[in-house]
Image 1: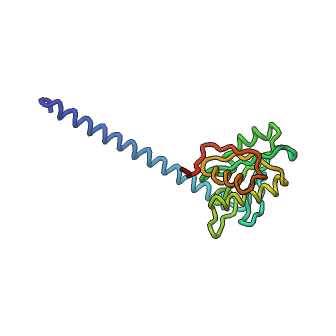
Image 2: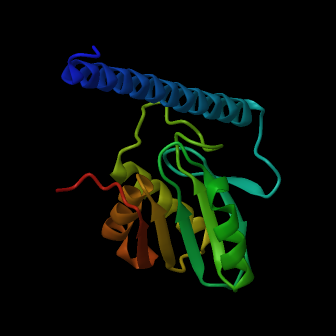
Image 3: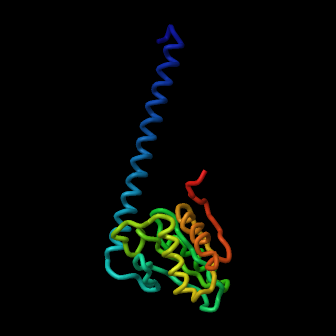
Length: 182
């Protein structure tokens, strides 16, 4: 090795690559562990029975949807839709902020996440989710159109809602949307 510097460089590269692979495997293990922990915590939270204080279940033709409402009853409604593996609680700071400024905030637990009912048939496509949201808005906002703010995978349901029930939507804000369109 002392006589051939190219051989020493090759061994250094291999050592660096091995260390990088070990670091990557360790980080991946931590990420998988965190995701598993979140899944377990969500499972426990959702199975403890009933819904927490400040939340109610809104009946729809596709099952009950858990909703958190804040702000004045006469405020302009804003509907907050979370992304994959989320729930209404992810919006808690935004919810409080908007409510303090006079908005009537409606944050939903989009099935199959949170405290909302699971659909026994598994209708979680955009159109079904949009139908759920439309029915929720009709009941909670009393027919008043809402500003819709949707994050990630929830953006598909929000965009579909604006498409199938445009009278229910005054505006659409998509945050880091995962729409799955070209």
